[in-house]
Length: 407
Image (cartoon, rainbow, N blue to C red; front, side, top):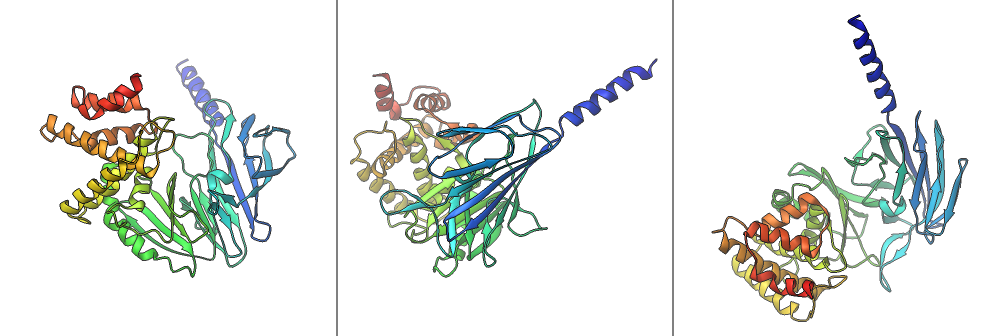
């Protein structure tokens, strides 16, 4: 009789283990430089699969869907109903995409392609049984002379093949920047992060300088924002790619002509690394917080690591304060250069006030760390509440903002 409970427990555990068996997602991407397209196959394999996948597509870039399993599409949404044990969805993706009049944030040439994998594979919402999880890989098929760089662990048994890692997500899909083609790269382990910098071959982009700069600054960034991922890819490319920096999960893009340190003693590269480390996003009125924090630490990290003296640091803050006078409003939908500069001035004053109130024990670092720990969207009210909680009282530096949001 004593064996009966044990037998039932064994049956329950075996049943749960079987129910929790993960399914595999294989993303296969064939790149054709002549057509400017990537042919994408999403292949699912397992005893149990999600009953429905909803893809939030860009109808101008995601084209020609096909599958042996049922699917229906309506403008910017496609619903696919996979069926075990194996299902495949195929489509074409237009790689070229303009950002502004003459620049691109995604493009392909005869020799290379730079794009984001989370645009290539659109956001996907999965309907599946509770506890059903996935494993995912990403494979590129390209011209023989091409290779790839992605912000993921490479599988040793096959070139251009990666394992997707995204803790907390049940349905895995790739995210972040990619570079494909005839490329050059440099790689090192820095502060526990596998850092790779890559660019098209023959473009005179100083990859080793960039890697050395990261080796110098990343430990200080990671001390402040330990959320910096285990794999970090920095992609660089020449015109007509966007002449600035653009961050994404586990990665960032930086135009090949951007200096590591600008004449005003800020760093676009550190700015984007802070975005990667914080993973915070603004609302209609709080983009200044996100951009201001990134720019503030673009100067602050240089000071902390000895890249600039305290005197040059003060000069940089003064220059940003003067530039910020050109902005009339912080609470805007998108933080321009002048608005970001104005935000840095406010954050600097906030840091000074917090330190004064706490005898140096509390500063902007505490607020920035808490925001990064939470991640996601930050609102103006959240920011004020966190700052006042750390201060233990209201803050004069935030009074102009409080008045605006209470109007």
